[in-house]
Length: 270
Image 1 (cartoon, one colour):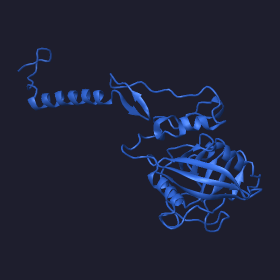
Image 2: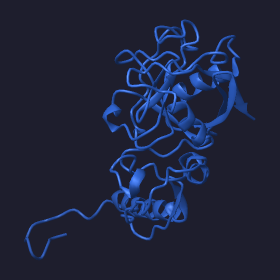
Image 3: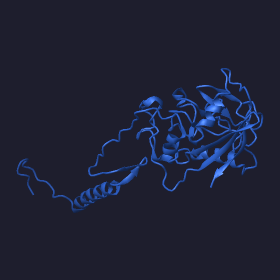
Image 4: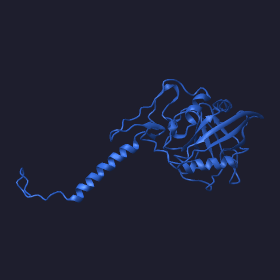
């Protein structure tokens, strides 16, 4: 056939190409239909075009004063925004671009630590471990709480506590920050740095440099974003912020606690 505008002979469209084009359009429509009313980072999204609107995140008031906020937000795995900071500030961390979708079917475990300050029980810490984002790091911590590998955190101390920064523990071999070991051997690599140090009550791995994770960890008592990209965040405090504040009160500028802060018991919620 001859094109009337170009005045040249052209071949008719290959039926296979036409079929492929129709299939692609059909697949695109199906993809949009499948995404509609689906869950993205714990939020229901509605999709009627190929480019859904971006979800805005933010906060309007301080949220770190008690356990109510922690129960509502930290205890729901990937369901809520990690981008809210103390004092009503909106951060740019843990946005849709930063954090990948949680792996389907994976359940984020919860573990606990019973704390003693001096010789007196101080209360229980309850943590949600982000196995959906850092499964290897979360599994290491979970096993060290349950002692199912024959060793773990029970009876160890928080050897370094610095107010307005963090409480560090996990050295169950030397009890001074020089020891500890992972369930994978002595050390294991940094898994990823997707989760950020955005708020108090986050669990993060202590290390002596890149790819040197063992059993030592810390609980943030403030936003510590300068640690992003250097330490692996792997969990959140669900209950017990009052206990963390009591632990923090035992801290000093050089990190040596005024009284011993001990993990008297630990385990997993099943």
